[in-house]
Length: 336
Image 1: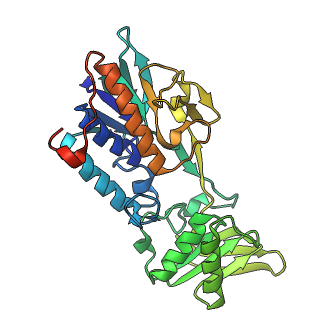
Image 2: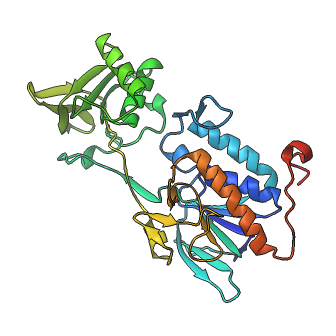
Image 3: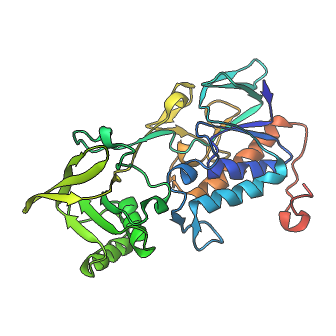
């Protein structure tokens, strides 16, 4: 049995920052995550993608943000159970909790903070015959390392920010030899500046933009060699390529969390914004996994939610102690 003060389910950026805030209150944290490394989606899906709305960082790569958060949490020596999804949570008679993973690892603490992001997710796959036979053989649904596409011909499908941003990134950084962006409409769902940049790149020949079209077929022997694009007016277009990357987003679900007796609203956990507590005393939910009126799914909002949750957790763990707010600008980190 692993003993700690706070069990944090989810080792993404919000969960990692919560370790720091808990450490300032001398609370020990143990994090559980189904992924093999800390960082959540920032590490697993888009480590090289720039993030622009973290205070103090005009731009920071997602992977670098995780490295910084790990360094920030390090003085408080968090422990991790990685590569194991939390599947069960049991409340004991004394009000504490046991969280069990899919591999049977048990964790015991008086409080639990769920920072599970979007929960369990999988990519939305286009309905194309033989698609799965080329997975990892030229077809990828997320871009983890853009350098993987060095000097390669890439066909990207989609009309949202991911499709636009990665198309721009692969061209601006002179990584891909050729980028073809295919979208079923003539209008895009992404940010207007990204849309305009893609249009400008298409006009100068840096990107081949095909709108009112969709990829309907994939071909090749041992690896992907061609995609078949169906255009609204020009019919079928056969395009030679090394990689086909359909970026149609992810299908999130809460997974086992949905069976833990928590009050839910659609695919998220309802919380009290006083301290981001759930309907089960001692369990909190922070970050993208929670919902409340005027909820914004931003990392910086999750940082605030985690800060408030640990303040409440301290009062629950130490009801006889008064928490006097100290400032790191005065005490530093080692002073806590």
